[in-house]
Length: 77
Image (tube, rainbow, N blue to C red; front, side, top):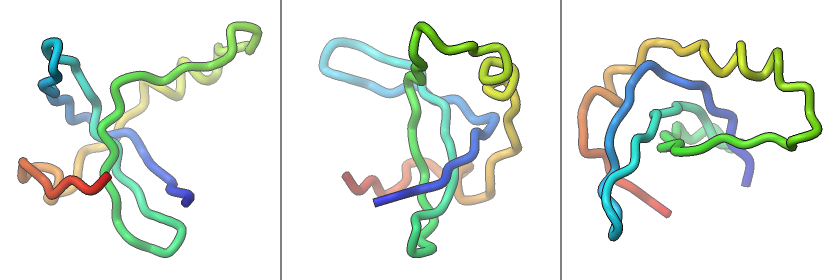
């Protein structure tokens, strides 16, 4: 499966068995055109990579859609 996602301004806190973790909501679409939402807690790159451009792009966020403002969402894993 492939999805294309875009970072939004919306941050949430996820509860886990060991506590809580912050997550940013990313919105996108699957390869077959189904809208998706991803709760991203971490993004990593190789230590050897030049991350200058990546770090700048990572700071860019768009406003979330109206659907994201409604929480909780149906989660499918």
